[in-house]
Structure formats: C-alpha cells, structure tokens
Image (tube, rainbow, N blue to C red; front, side, top):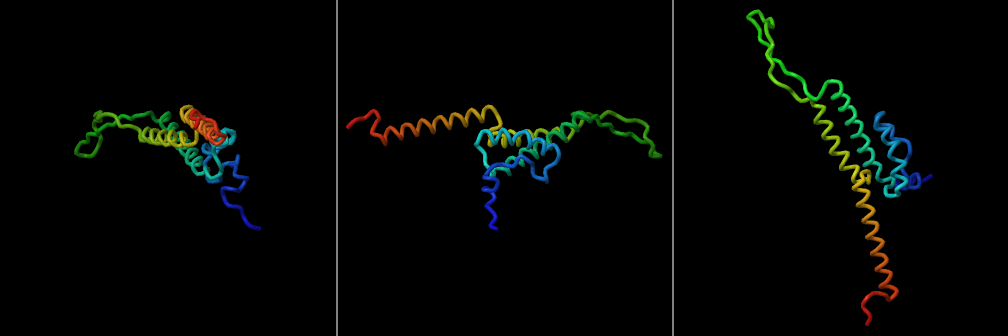
Length: 155
C-alpha cells in the first residue's frame, strides 16, 4: 500500500496525541493547544514542527521556572579566606550571582512569543490574522465587482 505524503496523513489534520519524543509538560501543552489550533483552521499537519518547538520551549520554560522557585533568582557568593593549614577561617560576602535558569526562562519566553505569533496563539497575532482575512475578503469583493462589470468608473 502506498503511504500518503506526510502533510496529507490524517487528512491534513494535526494529531491530538503528542509525538512520543516530547516530554511530559510539552505533551500536556500539545494536548491543550491542538484543539484550539484545529478549531481555527489556520494550521495544518505540516505545521507540527512549529508546534513541537513551541511545546518544547514551554517545557524548558517551566523547568527553569521551577529552578528559580526552588533556588531563587540569585544566590549569594562568598569568598573563603584560609589560614596556612588550608582551613577556612572566614567567608567574605562577594556579591550575588544570577541563577542561570533566569536566562533560560527569558530565552524560552522569547522563542514562545515568536512561535506563538506564527501560530496565532496571541491576541495580537489573532487580530492581525483576522485583519488579513478581512482585507482578503474585501479584495475578493472588489475583484468580483470588476468581473461583473461594476465599479466606480463607467466607460
């Protein structure tokens, strides 16, 4: 039996089940957004790679957030002073160091915003998509007027 092209499998629809290689949180994210994306009819099976990246970034963000909750956004740094025998005799405060998870959260958020915008997952991107659809409908109506001989200019 001939196998259908990838984008035509499942009649071009996205699977409600996440790919097996996604982690637990990414899989839960997939299950939450796929019904919404399918209802908008603006994404197809071929877009699954973008959705996987979005869900993966969500999982990375959540894991980094858990680290920040557990360890804080910064940690104190102390410089040890030792005696000749190598014993620590004093610890001087040397400042603070940012938890690397803060940067991971920032990077994941930036990627999620970018990918989410591509997929229509933000209010702004949905409004922009609706505006484009409205313009296309106006253009089609104008074209129909021209075809039917209507319009402002009469010869």
